[in-house]
Length: 124
Image (cartoon, rainbow, N blue to C red; front, top):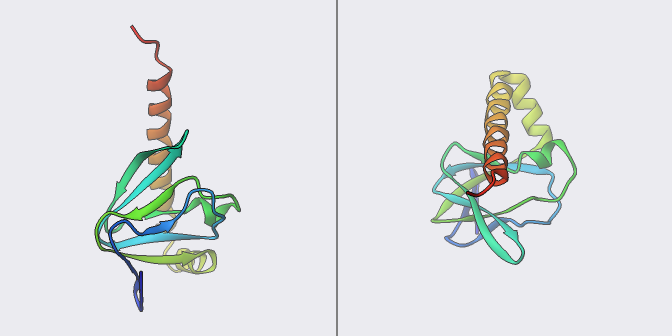
């Protein structure tokens, strides 16, 4: 991990956040790719691969809960950390940012609902 003026550079395999830890900020992928992995019964399951422009950890900005997944760099990735105060200031400067944030979160919830429905379908 290398701290820079415009984010932190993570090497392949380096963890950015770990499932179960308490968080209070979100992250924006500036370059490279990261994977979101959730451990279930001791085995990891990849939930998503995120690229430049994507964000993660936003739930920690809105609620004081533990991280629901681990995020690690797939290749060299530059990631910027954004705390609640900075996010709220940016939203005040550009309200469209809030709309984009809610749209992405809504899409993620919709995808999760589809996955739950698929898992509940009876096998034939």
